[in-house]
Amino acid sequence: MRTRRIVIRTLQYLALAAFLLFLGFPFLWLISTAFKSSSELNSLAVNLIPSRPTLTNFTDAFEAQGLVRAAVNSIGVSLATTVIVVVISVPGAYVLARYRGRIRALGSGWILVSQIVPVALFILPLFFILRTIGLVDSPAGLVLVYVVYTLPFSLWMLQGFVAAIPVDVEEAGATDGATKLQVLARIVFPLLRPGLVATAIFTFVAAYNEFFFALVLLQSPDNFTLSVALSTFSHGEGLSRIGPLAAGALIASIPSIVVFAILQRRLTGGLLSGAVKG
Amino acid sequence: MSATRELPARERSAVRPAATGGRKTSALARRQRNEAVALAFPALIPVIVLSVVPLLIGVSLAFTDSQLISTELPNFVGADNFVRLLRNGAFWNAFGIGAVWSIAVTALQFVLGLALALLLNTDLKFRGVARFLAIIPWAMPPVVVAIMWQMIYSPTNGPLDWLIRSLGGPNVNWLGSFSLALPAVILVGVWAGMPQNTISYLAGLQQVPAELMEAARVDGAGAWSRFIHVTLPALRPIVISIVSLSFIWNFNSFGIVYVMTEGGPGGKTLLPMLFVYIEAFRNGNTGMAAAMTDVIVIFLLLMLSLFLLRRFRKGAEA
Image (cartoon, rainbow over all chains, first blue to last red; front, side):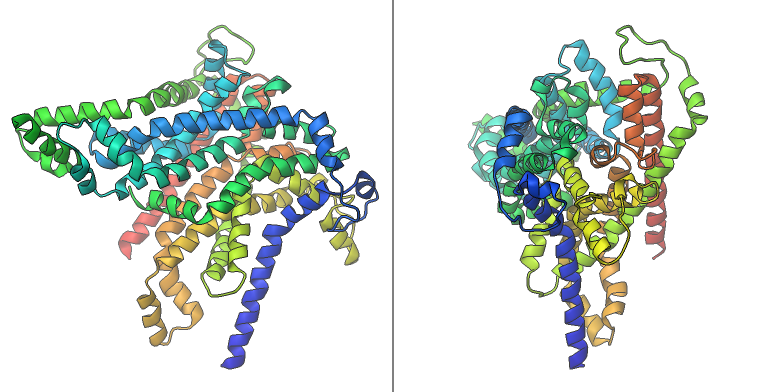
């Protein structure tokens, strides 16, 4: 019995180690490549720890590829999307969580449909609409598209947080004669803060990581987001200049990873409350 | 005074819809509805203008000869695009690749995600590290994931190639090989989708009642039997929703494969979305591309309803 337990434990640790290797190694390799000198990369030697770590890949990446510009675009577009989505999500999520009737049914139905329909079905008409109003190849047009693209999930997550606020709290806090908007601003909004943070982060990361819409809509390199700039780099001279490519890719993934690492626990909690309710 | 007494009642009925059953409340119900519409308005505008309208236009574009560069209104051509699409072998080939890709990725994500969740649900050490690593793929932009795995698969100085050669194997060009490119990108798809699966199953496992497990243990059920008879049935609702959503997401996947192979070599990794993208934005046949997306949406809805129906029937029998 005892040896059996030890065997099972050992197997469990072996499996966990295999998972750690599978999940973690590619990222370690990316870091390693980013710090290797070009002579080491050209020598075809395969080692995880760079023999002489260097930062030239990072300076190269930022000088040659317009990645600074792309990073500014990415962060600007994602921030604008996040602010707009959170502001319009709060009242919308409130309606989804607190009212019954047609508007709620339609809202929930649309959220479901938006998760199923491929983005390709939206992109053709969106492309034509944005071209008509002159917003193709512009950050503003991309923000518009991202607002629509991230709104369903944001609404869904937030309505879970609204539903978690007891109705009595709202009633007790409402002073006589307070309008719905005042109740929202004074009572619901402050209680919703943790949920808002989580939702804002999800929206930011979704917009920051998005690739397909940006690839289709953005045409001039000055407007590229990081994802588009990196994919262009990778399809162009990237595989012959693997060091700067790795450095750029590494830097591009830092914002999301840092945010996820800090808020890991809260994120999964928020996701669940959004998923379980409703 | 009467006005102030009225307000709390209105508040209550706004949030407790069961109270609005009476006949007298119709004015109240209307006011409530107006309130709901007003509050939802800011969210409704972008949804209708940039989501519902495009959806309708997108569906109807398929019945036109719409071209990317043309600025004139396209002509109605009936089901012409669909008829031509039926004979388009390349599209159905991409469709098949998409099916293989999404079935393989979804199945592996399910098995590996559940296995990892089970491991993380024990008292093993290093769980925290594993949990963090399991989230990383989620946080990374798909483009970065693709670039990173290109380096892993590199036939000149990639670590995978080095491992195989030092074990005495041949030099393998993973992404350039007709037979290996699809399995290679499938592995990346699995890697990228592990977080959502693992986290969801872990959350589900933590909700399995401990008493239930204990009762099964007392009854002499072994670990495997407990897993089959207690854990899996308890997880079923989560498994159903995650598996069906993953299948849809995977079928519509674009970024990772676009950056890694652009559909190559020889179209062996040409997923449906890549095919649509090329048809619309390289060949400029937006009408035909819309027909393709319509076919894909109909297929996904069919799959989803079949899957859910079967599950529901099973659930009803049980």
